[in-house]
View 1 (spheres, rainbow, N blue to C red):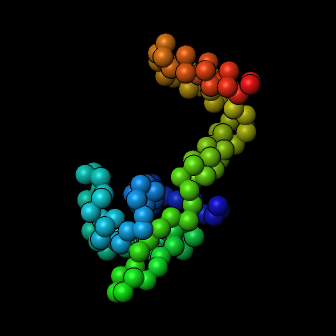
View 2 (cartoon, one colour):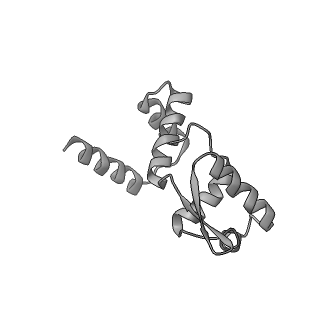
Length: 123
């Protein structure tokens, strides 16, 4: 995965492409969430940045470009999760888990799910 960070705005574009690709810039703009009322030139700028970061690729289809992600969502999430743990918790998972457990009101269902995941990891 590219060492260049993907900004929050670029991540919005990536989420759209992960959901369905290939898409034109116009298609991406049409699928933006309601809180992101960006113009088509803004979407094209973000796609251009993602091309430069090797996060997406494009193919020419007649007079239009079709964009597709080069980075899988799971790979991105894994990379960013590791980066967060490394940066904020010295690479150790338990301080992160303890922090989240203290800050969030975990429901009985949340705790059961965590226990299930831990059991799966032990197996």
